Length: 225
Image (cartoon, rainbow, N blue to C red; front, side, top):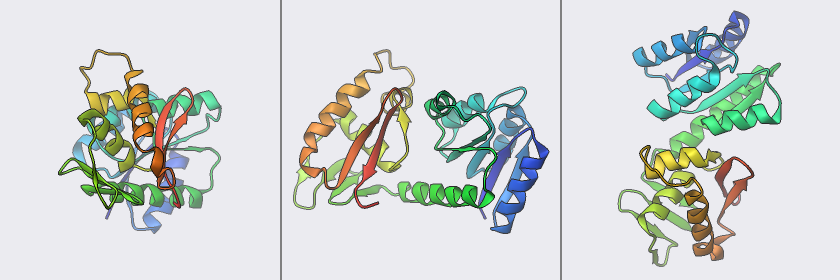
């Protein structure tokens, strides 16, 4: 049974989400603010977090950053803030999906199931982008006929993006995940490495592409999915 965290200061929202998710067999843990949510996560193995933005003590954006720093789980922002700038901030902090209130409970359920499928695929050492196979354990990339040699940073960057196809990563998040929190260079380093990867895989555009989301970051899109 998977454990879901619902962090929202509105008890009616928590009750609605709990009803829909428990009906599907999920175990739901509730928190009325970000600080309580942190405590829940420290005591319980949470598999996915559904969090509101506007909460007391620790807001949803701060909670999202905390989760990204300490856990590798899907995050869904469930909030009434529907401006593009609000969504940008949420994705920059590391959310995987963004659902605005009022919302259809069934749609939220569909999105959660999709995120679980994405993260389950990502747990393997072998990542496939149609003809391209990324072997994280042996640090190899192949097209089924030959091994493609990549510098380590480019390999790690490609693997990180390909591990979660469709998920948007900010430059800051990629720096932390690939280069490390103590990296002191410019985050435009990511842009340089993305450019090199696109050049290397120019002949494989029918298999996958690295998409730019202007002002935020990058994501891998797999053809046919």
